[in-house]
Image (cartoon, rainbow, N blue to C red):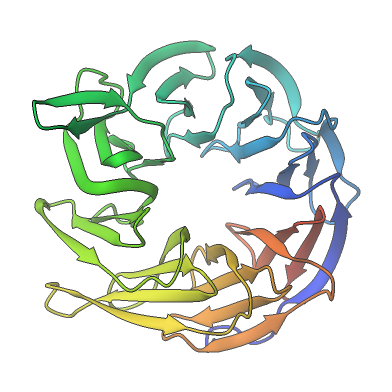
Length: 356
């Protein structure tokens, strides 16, 4: 980690009532976290947290800030979308609306520029204009199912959502691959990635050029969005694909994949015709979470073995951290500081920072 002069140190400890399901950092400061018990908290830094939601016994599965930090949204098992206003940075978020969806909210994703929020439940995605609290679009994810007589369309559960960095497209993954829709146009998808099984995770590179899909059969499909008709299929993942992130700052695109107890780095070759895989073996148990640093070519990984590793884009370990007890479930770098948030299976939250 040649760009860093010192190592992360444990700075703050907190606790939720159950497994930490999600962490979110505001671009303007502060962070939020949620748990499988249904509680959610907000914190401005190293102070005591403010309770946003009390534990209900129904999990909160997604929590996220809008791109401009004005809004915070959370949703989960109860089928209710909670929206807080964060305009006043000196006050905790103010709950302004609870929108009853009626079904388990599995994912939510903010538009990267506008205050539009995509939420998924079952086979449907709804887009909400949050400042006006109006629904602007509904999409249904369908996949082709073939039999000896005919090819038909069937509804598919949606496993992941990902906005293109420009906000022009929304990708959703499910049975038989990925469907890519044009912004708020719900007429028909403009792009597809077809696979034989299901795509369970998707992610766009930050420059919007490449899209990667992690599939149920342990393969990866990547496309160059400028030439989507010629996808790459990557094999060699040792286990279920749990998460994928793009690492920035290298000389070529690099995709990190959590699979089993290993991390795979896929580097695009210099001639942009193929991908070269590299297996990182530093964990002794399932790698549950990955987080790419927002500006440095550094990857954080958290595992059920109770360790966090920091890796360079070349696959070298720069630091190993543990608090001695936690099986880590989720990680998040703060966008504008050298701080890393970690969440665990027991509900513990840790903030690691580089000393001033």
